[in-house]
Image 1: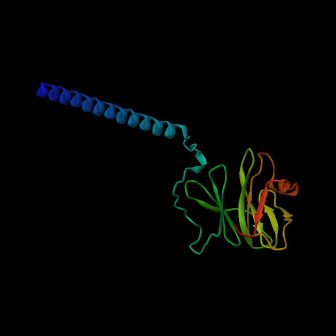
Image 2: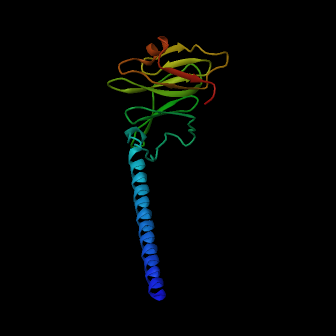
Length: 180
């Protein structure tokens, strides 16, 4: 009869509709899981930046020898010490915060400071106004070969066991610039 056919047809339509809903829900669930796993895989594939002990910062309260001292240049040594300079003196600052003047007689005002380390100790290396470099551990001054404008900042990367003045005279290990 017609009513039985419509009822069967309605049931078939309902079953088909439920099957389609189940398929859609299953596809949505599968796509969501796939996307989640893709995001996790991407996040784990990107390496985290390496932990570097020299990048750990700490605040240090420094006991300066004078309230009138105004540092203008600073260099970090491998030992954890800092070398801080004003125009006329250089100081060694320990991680504990004590500041002690370094015995380093310069022939000109100080433009910048760098640190040079060997197996036993670190010492400051000074860029002097006028284009000279002074290695405080040896007292040796070296002329800096440069452009017509005098360098105002520099950085030094010395190999262990190499004195800074010898490294400079071999034209290794120095980067100088008129501005950063």
